[in-house]
Structure formats: structure tokens, C-alpha cells
Image (tube, rainbow over all chains, first blue to last red; front, side, top):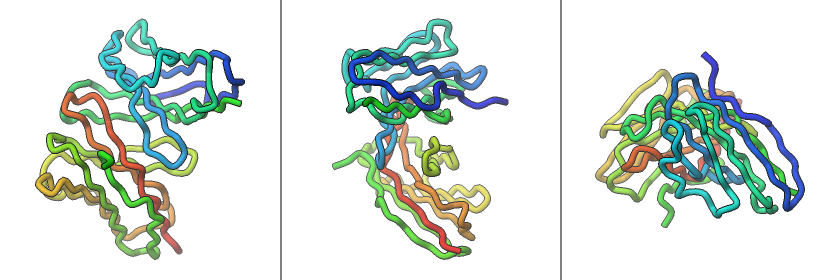
Length: 116
Length: 111
């Protein structure tokens, strides 16, 4: 079956603009995660959804970042007033269940965000 | 101290040799550990998960976990040039919802 998909694959924007990044998880996966990866570093957790609700948003760096998953499937990560420091690869992952010791997370191809 | 420590490399091995990748972690309650492979410009791909002390083998890959020493490793037998990538070690937090990653080890397999 299809894996996690993310759109767009690349996004270039100007400082101060608003962007939306979309993630479509593996069909049937109830848990969805957003991570951010800067060059030369490992991914860093942003937010976790179980179904429609954000069960853990402790990784969001500030209130410019927000994510939704209104129907428990597709999720959108929203970044307001973008800053150059927001430039990174934004990765979405999904798993069949959350909150389990054997929780394998599968990543999408990512969205490369560049803020000029 | 970082929560997950990996040598950034590059680790260079000849084709056909065994590549040994190591990772230490600080969270003593972690139960689940994962190795991801990441090619340049691509996203991480899950290659191994391990939950119990000891070895777990899958094809050319063997993951080793020692919870007492807070140490996990990945062995790649008969290394191929196509194995050249960055290998990321990660553990799952106690709540089971967040992966914490190391910075990755870059592996280069030379023909």
C-alpha cells in the first residue's frame, strides 16, 4: 500500500509569510507525528496526534507553529510569520497505534522549507 | 549530555566488510530502540527495531541492545556501496509517542 505522503516536496517563502505543510498518513494509521530536521542533525519531535486530537504538542517551538488533523487522517502543519530559522526539512510520520512500546513510526518524504 | 550520542563519522569501510555503528542513550527507562537509514536528501527509513537485550538479526543487519550499559549497536555484514548513508539511532519515550534521535553516523562503503 501507499506510504506516508507529504506536499509540497519543496517550499520557498519569504520571511514573514504564512505556510501550510500537508501530510497524508498510511491508510489506517491512527497516530501521526511531525518532526523537524536541520542539516546535519537528527529529526526533532514537534507534535503527536492520536485520532483528531493533538495528544502531545510539547515539541512546538513557539506559538507561530500550529497543527491540525480535523478528520483524523490528513494533517496540516501551519507556520505563521516565518523566520529564516524555520528553514529545515519537515517530516511527517505515522504509526498503526500510538502510546505503545512497539510503536514503529514510518516517515514520509518530507517537505524542504526554505525561508528567504 | 545529549540524550542520544552517535559518532558523526564518516565511518569508512571496504565493500564486503562488516560495518559497526554504535549509539549510547541516557534515558534509563527507554524500552524501544530503532535504527533508521537516511540517504542524502531523503527521509529516514526504518530498518531495525529492538526491544529486548541481546541480538536481533534481519538479513545482513544485526541490532544489539544492552540496557544495563545503555548501548545499542547496528552491524551490517557484507557491506555494499548502496549501504552508504547516514544511520540514525532513536529511542521511544516512556509514553510511547515520541522518538528521540541521535545526530546520525555517516557510513561510506568503498568499492
